Length: 366
Image (cartoon, rainbow, N blue to C red; front, side, top):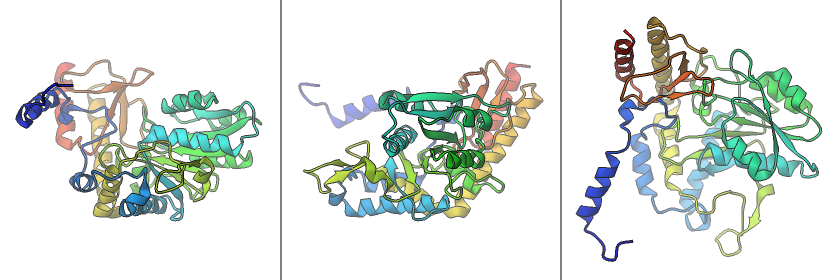
């Protein structure tokens, strides 16, 4: 810490220099986050000082969190769903597994069954909660093998996990089939829809993945991804509104005397930002944005295949993967664990960005 403070001009000159070291979003093709929508930024700034960790002091902000959960619950065919705003998919997944473990606390050596495509947050969750993680291989379509999933479940299984929009390949597991399997085994079923949760409801022919399926217990969704909110904004939704109460601990010196959240201090600003985007755009606006992202994904796939880079799989959401070893600078992409080039066509990846990338990669491999 400086002994004597610096001037505001000096400070922000330094910050500006550091900001220029960040990657330009115009060339970021690998991120599942995007540039926040202007209404999210405006809402965020309005609620900058609010703390949902002490909700009795911020009753208006707390009511907006409840409204956000109701909006998402309605989108997922259960307006009365319970839940709360998290920091993102990692926290939501940890909390879901905590709920599953508590629901079967008589089990001494609990395990969870997850697909090979599960986000790395499940490894963190299992390490923290001392759960055995059983990984189910994917089929040729990069979806969870339901037969293998059923075989992995035993008397010590506390949770089955399905993915709705996998991080690497943009695939949706056979959620309906997995829900039936979970229901028949009386096993908690968590759907990680951190990415796909705000894509699939706005597609014309997507398969059910939500509370419309009786076996689904909890759903994770991240408004700071396709919901274009400010970071961090995730949500965990529960089928029963009172389900989270099983995680309550005493908080004697706060405005509420019990809390079930993982984080203590919780910013209200990105939560209101998430609600702002959903209410500003509505279903029609979200549908238009998702349609644009999917159209750009299709254009990218077509262009890459013209240049001889075949798709690894036809995705369910706006994530495209290819057999391709390198891309030109300054484009920022990523590779899957199987070595496929991976690009996410987020809202900031406009058609002109797709065309520019295709031009550059075409010239590179000419």
